[in-house]
Image (tube, rainbow, N blue to C red; front, side):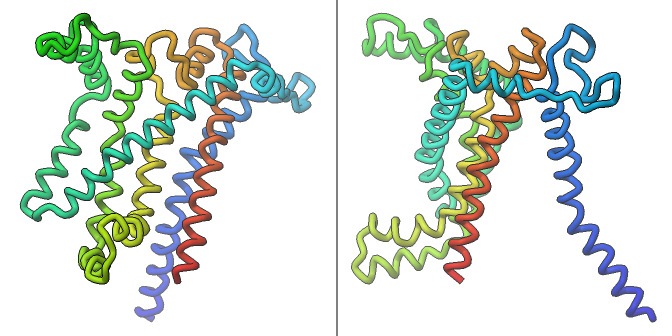
Length: 299
């Protein structure tokens, strides 16, 4: 009897453990998404809340696709989406180009040094994100440290216009999200057996060939995870483009903010958010299916 009761308790706890992530997704993803989707199918009104209810006075369903139709017909939103995706992709590639060598170096460092190097990667998170962006504003303005050093060295004759450019936005995005690329890459590379690379080189493979045939395939799960962790927040980033890119840096995060708080067009802003979410979910599902297919093929 005691064994039966213990087995039942184990099954209950197993079911709770399995149900917990689904409950989390239900409360913090599906329910908010349903609310945003419902608002996107309403009409804007000057009231509180600033959108029409889902049911009219007669109890009939009152939904409209006018906000989505407006998104499809206005080129401004298409350009903003495209620009946001391009900038997020470039920032992700920059983080990958910088983060992969750093993660590889940390993974191959001595154990007594490895902890210190990881601490240096995580250390910026102890400082407010907004303060770190403001620090870059001080570094890149016309009288900032970067221009002052270049002027003192005689490399330039006049201050460079670094602020309020795409360059400043890329610097801010790369700096802010680089740890999100390094950490999953390190977790993958640290588990890789270095003897595999040495064996490939002993068999005549060059360092480049050994990297592409051994290191890169084994590190691909970390690359995918790091790229997703960088791309997803970068595409909807608001603070960095607003502070470093200036008013001309019109990205989808800025559009969302303006539609919600300046124009108070909540249905249109919700439609923008729904389309943005679909742009993020589709590649995530595609990558997960490809990764699962590769794992099945390897097995």
